[in-house]
Structure formats: C-alpha cells, structure tokens
Image (cartoon, rainbow, N blue to C red; front, side, top):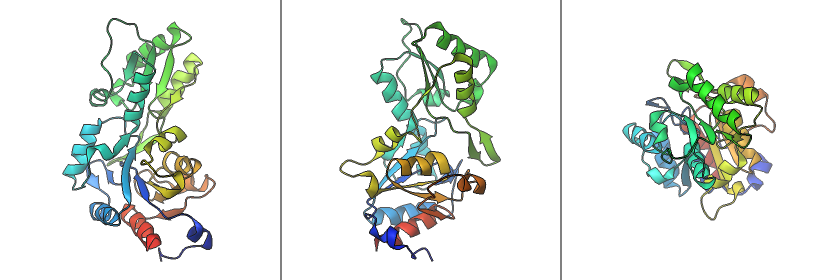
Amino acid sequence: MLCRRSLEQFRKMSVRAALIDLSGTLHVEDEPTPNAAMALHRLRSSNITVKFVTNTTKDSKKTLYELLIKMGFQLDIEEIYSSLSAAAAYVETEKLNPFYLLTDDARKDFPEEDLSRPYDSVVVGLAPAAFDYAHLNKAFSVLMEQKSHKLVAVHQGKYYKRSDGLALGPGCFVKGLEYATGKTATLIGKPNKFFFNSAIPDGLSPNECIMIGDDVNDDIAGAMKAGMQGILVKTGKFLPEALAAISPAPTAVVKNFAEAVDWILCRKH
C-alpha cells in the first residue's frame, strides 16, 4: 500500500537525505518506537544521508547521543543537530551574556556565564524546575532593564510526549514573557526556516530532503515551508485535530518511523 504514489509525487526529485525528529518519532522517553532501530539501519543502507534534528532542550547533545546508543540506535554524535546547538551558536555570534531558563544538562551546550558583565538577554528552553515565579520574575527583570535586551526562545513548543502522556512545553512561558515585557522572542528551533536550512547536509537542496516527525506544525509544516517534503508519524504528540488544521497536507501520514522508512525506500526503488 505504501508504494502507491501520485504522478505529482513521481515528478518530485528523489530523496537524498532524511531529517529525523527524535522525541516522539524515534523514541518516547527511553523506549524506541516500534522497529525504529532496524528501520534506521535500513535507511542508512540505502545510501540516504541521515541527520537528526530535534527541538529537545532538556538534554545536552552528549546526553541525547548516549540515550540513543543505549536504546540500540547507531549514529555519530555529529549527526545530531539540535535547537540547543543552534541557540548556542546564536548566543556566541551575538556575543550575549544570557540569564538561562534551561536545565543544568542543557547548559553544558552553551558558553559559560561571564560574571564580569550584566545579563543582556534571556534564553528559554524546556526547564520544568525553572518555571516558577522566582526564575520567571528574574527573567522578566532582565528583559525590562534595557530596551535592547533580547528574549531568545530555543523553541516554543506547546507540548511534548512523555510516557505518562502529553506534558506542557516551554511555549506558554515564552508567550508569557512576551506579553509581560512587550518584546518579541527570537525563535531559534523548529519550525524556523533558518533552522531547517542550517540542518541540510552540504551539497543538497531542500527538495532533496524529507523530514520525518510527530509534530505537524514544528516538524512537518516548518520543513515544507522550507521547501522539503514531510512525513508525519502517528506516534509521540500526534493529534488528528492538529493534522486537520494545516495546509498543505503532509507528503505522507504513516503509523510510525518504521513505516516512514518503508515509504521512502519504496519511492527510491
């Protein structure tokens, strides 16, 4: 069934790279999605370049890598491109000295705090332990000190998938700080077009890439706006009502990552 394709799909350029979401797509917390490790091996064996693109902001790249290896996935740490990586590069490029609303592990990916300088920005990721009044009020104070102080959102996801169900993401806290300060956050991660373009392997164009993810907006709509194709999986945070709300529709909607690989390989051969 996955091999039936429209004439329009046949006319599209062949897939040469797959950009793969992590949480909710390859795994949910410390459990792989069905047959995901074997499917990833099959995808690599077809000579399709693989890149892991994630909005995960709770864990450092090293922690993500070790988690994936423990679950049986084969990858190099350099294949992981996270919104934390992009945000850290932004902080360095802009020479910022931020107040961080991040987990201790995520902070490992960022420059050390410069104690000789005052805070000039706030960086927000997924940091449940820091989303209390004291931390949020400190962030508010930093942003209000100077008009030029920046609010940086590693991403502003509404929710994410845990083993016990959906959980609140950092988006509402970013929006709260925007509302209170009158500032507009600089968004770094998915669905930012810059993020997707930065993740494309060297020498390839967007229409040679396909994104596989569970978030219909951040993963699929974001990638398609950047010129890629998008396969939505029905694992993780997938909600049917969210799918009905986006246009254009995903290139394909499948049960899980393993079926997404089936779809790609069927198209390739």
